[in-house]
Image 1 (cartoon, rainbow, N blue to C red):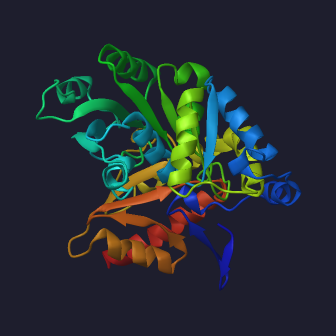
Image 2 (cartoon, rainbow, N blue to C red):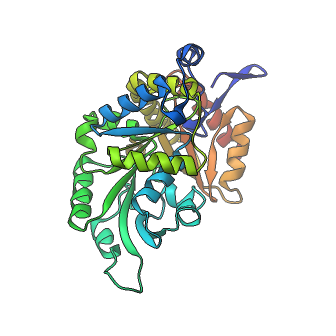
Length: 356
């Protein structure tokens, strides 16, 4: 990412949330036609919502400030009766990183199922987690999936798996929500028609501000009735905005153009994983990298991942650590193909210095 420090670039690969809006996005913000979105009078927002709904073959969509709000709206919408329960992965963003909003604000209970290495929830585990009707238990209403799966290294849910979960939900009168924060990365990886891919899913949250590079915003996508209720929830949660076309305009470019270049981020992530796999103190399987996220392990006696990340920061490579061993690097449009060898060289220099 092109910030100059002394005589070298700083490469920020902490997350794809660090992406800045493109020049075209900034111009679209300046020239956007706006109105009051709470009164449903912002034409740019309406166009973005229409585009998103049509892209996924659904009836309607709603523009909201953040992915966390989008997921919360969907969970609260499906679990509108107090004491409802939803099934969710133990490594999911909804469960780990959204401050328990479904419980504190939505009055619904998460039933946690183990995420497998590929980001899926085992069908048998989902089945076992569905409550029988009993006065002692919450009522199961919903299953939540995440795609791509952040904590599992950007893993992509396969179409057949989604169909199987959707069929299981239908058999048990449950709704199916997809946290699609990086859904366009999954679609790019599979080379699949979005409409076919999400068949059987009742609601989607789609983030515009990660690899798609919009400065802000997510979309809730579902049926017309679902979006009517979602709009009310957005208002209650403080997400009703006024002349919001100025931030919805970049979303149009995100869906139309930025989604078509995500494969470059995937290629760069793969090359990074291949390169770093040969370095000392590093454990990673390059074959496991599917999209733009690389998780790897840093193992050195007497040091933890946090120390390593800090040393990399000193040489202009910014990453994040999880626990004592895991490090995450995420690739996005600010990182070009020719940047990858430079990043690897700097990391190698850090690691070689630790051998001494």
